[in-house]
Length: 414
Ligand code: HEM
Image (cartoon, rainbow, N blue to C red):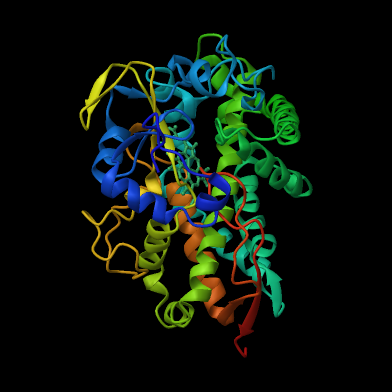
């Protein structure tokens, strides 16, 4: 697993995409800190991921890193083309990629739209959307097309005032832009071009919407964001549009992956759907166990703002560290029998929504949508059978979910 330079290496396609968990086990047991296949460091144990997510010596701004120069980019340290480079508005860093104090300002603004009270108030409309998508469920369907993709864009789209007729194009943009997260994974030129085009189109789209909204004095999320121009130093409408892109787009793909990963587990554990139908209140425990065992987000990253020492190595200022959240979620030091799907047996300690100042903004919304979706499915279906036992996962190593998931459903008599 370690090559002659002492660097961790494996073939992404054959060893990783199909089943990354043996790799994670090996890393946790024998190589808690390695130089990863993308040239950055990688950590896999729970204690390290948890600590580094919260460590203020670690930032998120890749502009502060030596990553592009060392790994993914050109000799001049230019970022690779798939990062939105050259798209007007993406030159300023985006808040998921910022450090305090800039991050704090934008985060608190966006956070206002995702308070517990606002999310609670969405419960009935999310339930109605789930009913709309699942009523008249056919015997054979694709879980991603029928539920995973449409549910989050309908809910987020309504929150942001995106008209229904535009929802479909967002799903496509989301899949294409998700490649942004595949830093250093060297997507093919076609993928990079499609991603760049999607970034431009989606940023243009939000610029239009923000311009229309900005002066109407309304209080929805988009109008608040439009007024954030007054917030500060050189923030233009294009920058705010870029923030909107990174607010909506990662949420769509990650949530769709969650639904797909959940459906795979429902098919492989036939007791779960009937259990949910009998006791819908267990949906919380089921959801947390799915998030722990098969998270949609397998990794995140941090950049060392200051040097630090870990497992006897010096992590230098500017080094990038990959945090293998999905590996940490199966750490036997924290979770008993970690490879086993056992709702209720494991606590909510998983790291699938992150930790610290970059903790997922969409956590509560995702929980609400997922619980409604699982219970909605359990009310209509007694079992799901995968049409193909070998699930075709999307390309990439950061986000994990089925590319498509055709299933055969045994429907409940109504
Ligand atoms: C099940 C679905 C989801 C999962 C597993 C997930 C996971 C994550 C994780 C792990 C992070 C932290 C990244 C880090 O610390 O480096 C994060 C951040 C974030 N998530 Fe989610 N997410 C999900 C859904 C959503 C949704 C629906 C939205 C949109 C409303 C969203 C918006 C965000 C944003 C904006 C951030 C960045 C926060 C910041 O940098 O301060 N996520 N998410």
